[in-house]
Amino acid sequence: MADADIKGFFAALDESLAGDRFVKLTLAKPRARGDGPKNVYVRPVTLKGGGRLSFLYRYRTRDETKNYAPDEGARRLREMLGSEFLSGHLFTTAEDLRLDFNRKGESRLARHAPTFRRPPPPRTTAGSGAPSTRRAAFTCERSA
Figure 1: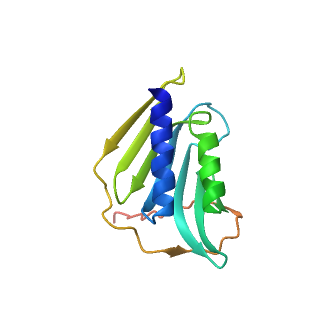
Figure 2: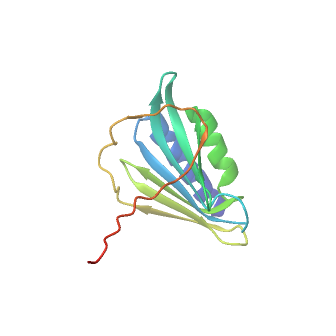
Figure 3: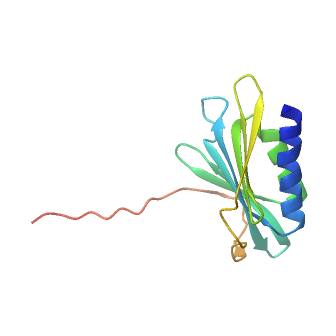
């Protein structure tokens, strides 16, 4: 059953990428505690070279963005989900899928109605691949 869950999740990923139904994907619950990323957020972007998947690696103190061709991005996701991350949440315009692994490596796939009915407008980015730092905007009010 677990093998069917994994195949179903990645089949839905491949179909959404091929059919322009992919909205975003989130990897969460890192297997190892340490200096690795806490989350990975994947979304489609349009660059000068064409469509890419933008991977935002969110670390404790910094963010890092890398852009991959769709095939390479799907390969990277297959490598990370289950080995580096225990949870993957795929958002498409057809359905939402969540693949969870327990510490023993057993998987469970849940399917839900789509959160997004149509794909977001295409985003463009500089695509430098350089690390970026996350800055939160804070508003301070002083009492008189």
